[in-house]
Image (cartoon, rainbow, N blue to C red; front, top):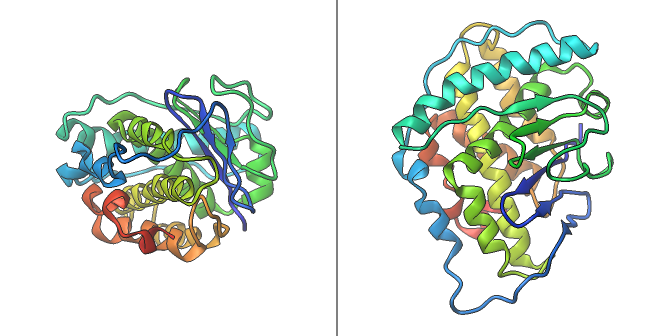
Amino acid sequence: MPVALAVVLVGVLVAVVPSLDGGHVRSGSAQAPSDAVPSLASIGDNRLLQSGAVLADVRCELPALGSAPERLEAFYTAELHCLDRAWEPALDEAGIAFAPVNVSITDDPTTACGALPPSDEATGLYCAEDATIYLPRKRTLEAFGLTEQAHLATLAHEYGHHVQHLSGILADANEQLQHYPAGSAADRELGRRVELQANCFAGVFLASAVGRGSITEELGDAAVDDFRNWVDSETHGTSDTQWTWAARGFRHADVGHCNTWHAASQDVA
């Protein structure tokens, strides 16, 4: 079950688009690295990551997943409310203002970040400009069918990008991105650190919800294991690495263990 997702970074209209060949779609020009460029590790000094906050335990009551628009939207909306309840206290603890995010299942949507990438390049997109997660119904059903854990994991991952936006991590990543030529090894590694952190944040959320309500132990474990199905990508990492970071968040259950920015390069490959 290949999964490709996109996140539009904030501030400079840069779309990081995972595809089977690891390509990027980018607007604007890139600057060559210089000695003045701070280390990527500096992003790891973000106050959310340094807080080591643990998400609030939540009980998620999710309706039955279905392919009809109203059923799919109801499932995502219920999970989104659960994500809000889990993440808001952790952000407050770190002194970060909380803001909600919306989810859209509209096919061929118009977004504040521009058009979605082609369906063979991306399943969904997080756009900070309009605070919306886009998971077009046709694309998601073609990618996941009605496999509950895949939908659960994907929305949690995309919400992880929202947390990165609220905390300033995406803005910092955007600033760093301008110092690397498009498609360079450094450019791709930065993208992997962004995406793998979102996987880890998804794992932290699942740890806060597992064993209560609709997210049983079995479903929670399956949602973490679903990251093994995500395709190998130069912008997202190998399937094994993607699962490793999701499992790390699930196992440790605190955001401090999701500091991909302080990880060695081989750990985000």
